[in-house]
Image 1: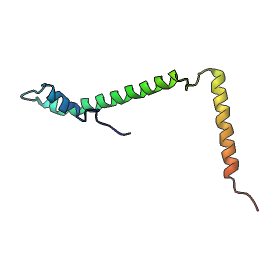
Image 2 (image 1 turned 30 degrees about the horizontal axis):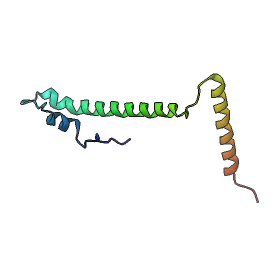
Image 3 (image 1 turned 90 degrees about the vertical axis):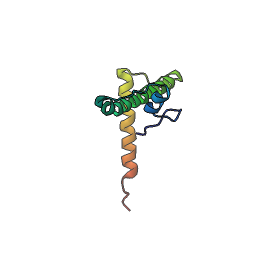
Image 4 (image 1 turned 180 degrees about the vertical axis):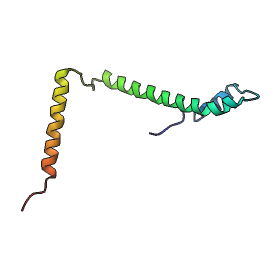
Length: 94
């Protein structure tokens, strides 16, 4: 998984400093906890982006309705693909 910087190109820490949120004396816990918060926040934003992608896909009609019947049909499709792949990969006796 790749972690990308925000479109501004600045890290959360850099953006906070630019916004004037600088603390004169950082307590020990802040210095240790900031990177942890930054990682969690970055992961949260990645998850939100994935959810947005999924919702857009559904809006375009690219989703699959999940019912017992549709899952059985999906399982059959997968089984058939695997069977065809096994047959295609099987060495032929000459």
